[in-house]
Amino acid sequence: MKQKENLTKIIVPVISILVAFIMGGIIIICLGKNPFQAYGFLFSGAFGSSRKLAQTLVIACPLIFTGLTASFSYKCGVFNLGGEGQFIMGAVASIFFVTKTGVQGVPGILLSLGMGMICGALWGAIPGILKIVRGLNEMIVSIMLNYIATLFMGYVYTTLLRDGSVPQTFAIPDTTKIPVISKGFPIHWGIAAAIFLAFAGYYFLFWTSKGFKLRAVGLNATAAFFNGFPVNRYVLFSFIASGAVAGLGGSVELHGKQLRLMSGFGQGFGFDGVAIALIAQLNPIGTAIVAFIFAVLRKGASTLQTGMQIPTSVVDIIQALVIIFAVAGTALLRLPEIRQYLNRISGKRKE
Image 1 (spheres, one colour):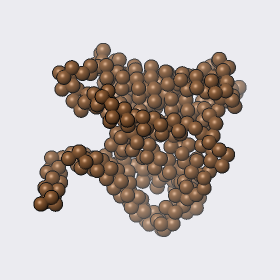
Image 2: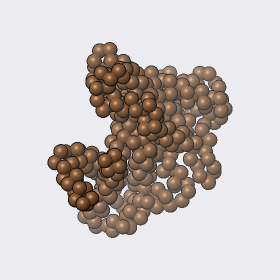
Image 3: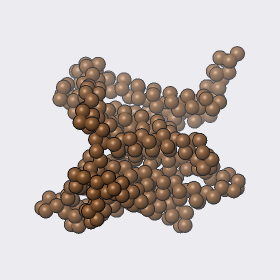
Image 4: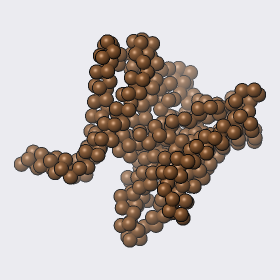
């Protein structure tokens, strides 16, 4: 039974992605273009060279962090929709640390990343505390905190750390940039941290007793409470841990790619992370894989547009269809009628 459920969690996202690409192909045909040629341009734009692959991974990096933020908190049964705000506040803390302390080199990078994690964790703790103490809805609180974080970042890059007449902060020093793996493969080492967190999160959730208790709270908080689990403690921990992951992601994005804060920094990463986590069935490793697929679509969209004169909105449609089919497929499989039908089929095969 467990193997069947695990197989279903793999099959649903795969089928969703395939169906979305088929639907996208139909749209491309309606535009009078060859879908096979179009997808050739799409994938060549993402994988055509080592440099293009590196750029795709750079795009995937923040999506992995925010996807892990959502998947970790959702496993505990809480809905942290504040990944974007926590991502931004992590970057804000890092830019303040680098600018005000002047610490450079590897110590500066590590301390700045640590400050990003701490600030993200504190920002994530706010909806957790309000949920536990006052019973407030964490979704509403975390969404409102996204706006506050965005407005505060705007205050930072337009006044406190403004670089002359341009509404952006000073660039971080070259010595505090996260180094790239190699000149031929210019992806910064932040991607290694994202992948490590994906495997570490999977190990914690599915191979440790603490992870089991956290998932038990997510499945049924009432039953967990009457079995002696400290439910509120796990709820708060999930917010703090997921906020720390998002804060680290914002700090990595600052030190590895953006190098300064400006309008649009971190925009959309939080809700993209939620979609990615849901498509991956809240599996941390699956989240990293789906984030990479999203990055492939985004990186290849420009090549598709220039090579075939197909608007990038077609890629956005494909991405939206992946989300719709994945969520709908998961919901259908939870219906009692569908479950009974699948059980009957598996029973006949055993006979």
